[in-house]
Length: 69
Image 1: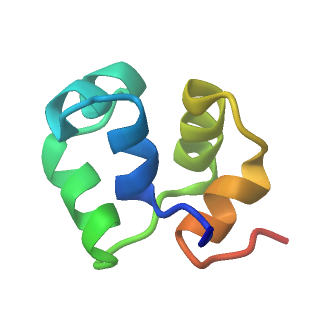
Image 2 (image 1 turned 90 degrees about the vertical axis):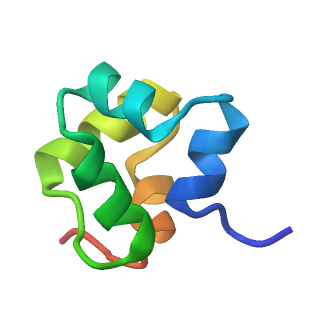
């Protein structure tokens, strides 16, 4: 099974972009840009995503193809 991407993680919870955005305190446009690879979450937002999905931060890092150092 491939590494999950941000869209797959959201789908796994049955959420719309709007619902996810509200849950983590960002705009729907921001979620759209992340999922399209046009922008990347800040470290703070990545932590919020990891906490929301109850996954390790490395899962989020891999999902956005970005590694925090």
